[in-house]
Length: 514
Image 1: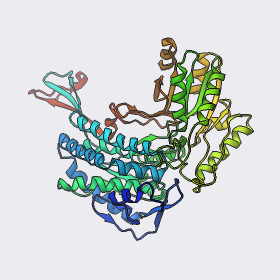
Image 2: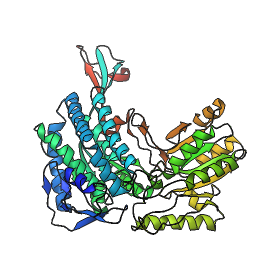
Image 3: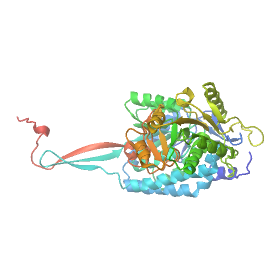
């Protein structure tokens, strides 16, 4: 393996070996006896390490231990749980450079984005520490004399987490940091395309829980294929399943969990648009659209897929974007001079090429032509050119999310038309408007404006902060993670009525005398 960027030392620091077990309840790792999965870097095509896959037997062993751990963990005072999460955040600070490098190398995002993802983990831990003292209920007045009512929130149980390759550690932390302070234990099934980052995280947090004399099973990891995901989704012992990934996958999880009347928190596909009005600050608009379209090589659920541009500034935007795309440097994500890294694998490249063929077949015109890069530095076959095509919103391929750096330019004349175009896709995650006109901004944010879970003004679609609830509508799934009151998804609500009188009046004035 080429170690010019120090990846070998980072792997050693994170406890990643050439061969790794893939099932864990904390510090305890279970040998399933099954075959191993090799993780290859899209940066250079080299094998990083291998991970043993879980079986149904190891899954059962992990769940059994998680159930035992929950009985202890739920009784730990919430502020104490928060203090332990604080220590996890500090541990992440110590390994930020190494973990960010592993995320970058295993997934393909730039090293700066890898560091940013670890920073998200640290930030959500900080958020969760404060939250641990703010799991507030309500006190209500009773209609019955001598009675008091209130509501409180209790720990839910095991939270199952299915994460995607594009954010191999951050999405897990959004769920676990909140779930842990809420008194839940977690069972994580990471993407098979980025399992080593998950193993590194398990090593970090397992030590923290052990140092406090807590039982195995508060943080659980199980690396497996779709069959393990199916076990998790159908398991009635897991009251909440949080799943991040494609809409197709989310529908399967939602159906399985729904059939057993469990809860699902779904973070699925996005087909995000930026509206650029004639009143936009084009410097801000171009910068926002550029990073939104090519950050993480277009493999974010919040990636800017569509640019809806007012006809008076359309040509100026098109030309400036084409110029900016021409200046992008594509190459190894660990080399900080590069702006864009590879796609996750060659299957993603095939989907990228298929999308280009489809938009051309539908009548789309190339502004910046796409293509696969070859030659020195591109041996993995995963490097592609960020592309721009003029298109129509109704094209089938434009209605579909392609996880690649392809940006569609769409022209509009009036703002109501632009908003209708923005909303005219099955997905509803992130959206933005670029304007200095207050009326345009407020119209976009109104109930008749963007139908997305995230609606921004003068920033792009990508790069949500952890303080706000993250998630979307329609085929994005409707779930919310991270900030605001997202913590309520990880708890069960209980309404309490206390009678401190010497009488027993019934509600609604009902008489029942004997």
